[in-house]
Length: 292
Image (tube, rainbow, N blue to C red; front, side, top):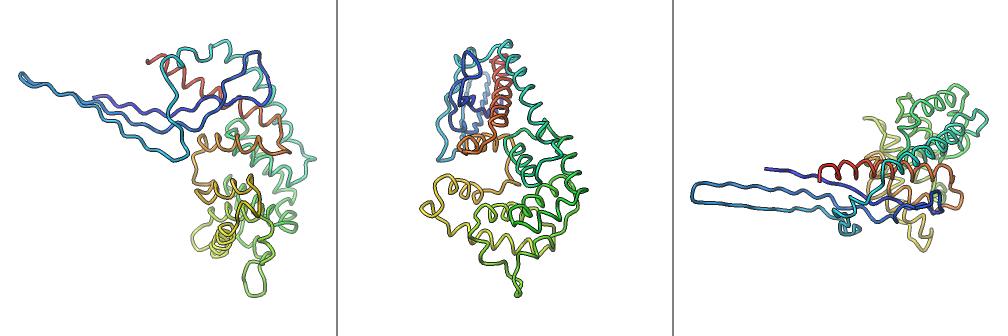
């Protein structure tokens, strides 16, 4: 009996040429496929059964991986070129994370983007150091006095990295009756941040439970006609499954495509994310090539 479990994506193409031979264009995620092959034989009977069971989403395209494509995948030499370029880009991003003069919110959004794009493992110590500086310099107290987005984003990042932060940070965004201020719903970015932060609630944290109900109710009321296609995609993606519950490597695929649509996207960070993703895919291809 043999069991085969395979989950791969095509490489993601760069928006502009970094190499003489650009990588293939990205396609949608390949469905997760489980193949079981069983055989039983006796003196007089021979039986062979092949069963394929696929788990699909309506947004997925059929698997385009084949044996010929695996054989034609990137060589070790091209991978080394990618690694060298990635090291240079990584150094630039690291300087940005460690920039002590950066504004608090700018730093937090950079860290959030780094993690969403699947690059967190490259900057673990840098991110921890930046958050330490953020807390010790009074950054958390500062952002909680300025915006709901900054409060929710800093709360989520700090909790993710093991810092003790209180749900009371959101009390300032409630009215005299203990309800979240109605005018907050006009800021979709802030509501999305509040929604994501609410999923890091501990047992008994009623403010965060109320924040989740408040955020979900307002996000579900939004339509593409009101907020535009790009923001609508972000809202629908978040409501489908919160960031805290997603698989980081699979989430990186969606995040890269979403991030590259932003007019203010950090191009260095975007290039690094694409290179990193494609290098990991090349490792998967090599392993498959060796076993095929």
